[in-house]
Length: 238
Image 1 (cartoon, one colour):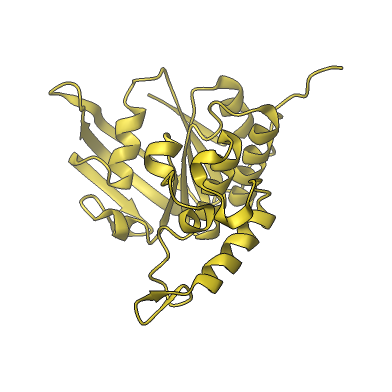
Image 2: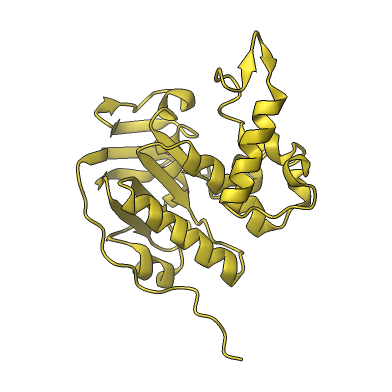
């Protein structure tokens, strides 16, 4: 039996208004007393996938950490949906940004939480999920069940499955389900298919393209040349 091809060239997007604008950005390296990101400028528009390519260790991690608030920006500016967020908190950035992180165990999931708890990590304070300071467990369960079905997240015990016990592909599907459902103008996805099987890769590619086609701005970081060539509307090299 011939192996399935995981990647096919997608039709081009139709870019709209500018969502993310990065100007002369500098971010300090954790390992060395120098900038890992040194005066980088680019933009991402609604309805396009912009891919950042390059050899691993060329500053991609620090760039994304600077954009998402995980690392301190030492120079330049970041504007998201017309608002300057250069030194904004992670919570403030999250108003218009979804993030599928490079390390799903360190930054994507709380491994000892249930699937439903992970689904509402950033949203548990919203009125639909809490009342009078108490979590509305029925609402959380219903929300998690909907995402599990919609995004085909497979787990042994459904919404109460401990995240640690799930396969890598289904952990990643859970993160994507949560971040896509937040419905933000910008989606940042960092090596979202690393270590996954062909079926999971195909699924994630379709989700990213669907978000672009729905008018979202997608910033993708990948080390996989085939993935870059098949998904990107524009390619930036670091």
